[in-house]
Amino acid sequence: MIPRYSRPQMTQIWSPETKFRIWFEIEAHAATAMANLGVIPKSAAETIWEKGSAAEFDVARIDAIETEVKHDVIAFLTHLAEHVGPDARFVHQGMTSSDVLDTCFNVQLVRATDILLEDMDRVLAGLKVRAYEHKETVTIGRSHGIHAEPTTFGIKLAFAYAEFERCKNRLSAARAEIATCALSGAVGTFANIDPSIEAYVAEQLGLEVEPVSTQVIPRDRHAMYFATLAVIASSIERLATEIRHLQRTEVLEAEEYFSPGQKGSSAMPHKRNPVLTENLTGLARMVRSYAMPAMENVALWHERDISHSSVERMIGPDATVTLDFALGRMAGVMEKLVIYPERMQANLDKLGGLHNSQRVLLALTQAGVDREGAYRLVQVNAMKTWHHGKDFLSELKADPEIAKYLSHEQLEDMFDIAHHTKHADTIFERVFGA
Image (cartoon, rainbow, N blue to C red; front, side, top):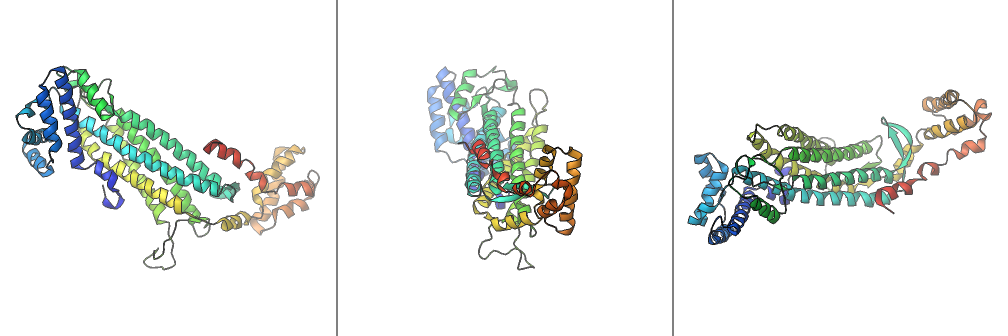
């Protein structure tokens, strides 16, 4: 985690203090369930809760113990015993380290996901407001970076809204996928711990029981989770890239908010660079990079190995913290995005009406011209506009071959911009509801 790209609420989830507190809660809930079954004395479970809850776990002390014992969970249990006293012998009965580590990791991922879902809501809200604001703002659509046909800036943002709504749905599914608990003991057979203890702890932590867990929770769940984060990152980059293109000097239809006192370049005082969306592009690359090691973690040896452990210590915090920051930044970009409708109109007019070429092509075919012939007639006149700056409608009207099939009035009707925006309401109803 890099402080520059981190926000406190998310980083707190991954702090050692939070991790050890979750470890304690797992052990304490398990102790309560064991006491209810008569496996350990109820007084012991009460002592574990009382003294453990009051304890301030000393990260430096745990690290010092781990330096000696070379095992993080044992180091924690040793430190916990220093607080609990003799009844600490009843802690961790029938459990194995993975029961604590995996369940804690999933608790942290669930908490992180809840923050990410709130982030998504903010992005969606910003997109919706700006989409309705510019539902009728006509702009040129581009394919291959070249002028194609008109759309509206609101439809562009509605497209992004629908994409991020899909992302949110995937993230909700990923949360459910990852929200499992395993307290099944060595190799996952429940030989020394009753399955009801796992069920109790799962309920207390807001998780579901893992149906079968060898000695670890199966990592296909985590692979799907981090792949989902990667897809969200890709959607962030797609929108960021669109904004970067629109901010290019030659286009300048929208740009990031440039605050008073902000400077764009150390050398050139005139510069207003898309630094936020460029940053988002880079952050998206990082989040995507965490998906591959999560995939590789699926294939563990037999009932358990720890080749996944070092990976997850990195990708768990880094992926969620980075995506949280990126979503927050994207929301801010959209909320303050400066939009230039007059520049959109100027760019639309730049090619002299060529964006209506398909309408003329279709009208000619409906008037009886074969498609190849119609395409040739339209393209010949379009290239006069493309190469020599001629007015497309005027060229079409002056073409005697086209005049055989289409009147001047018919041609003029084909240059009505409302034709391209007439279904904006339908699109908005599909995306946002009636």
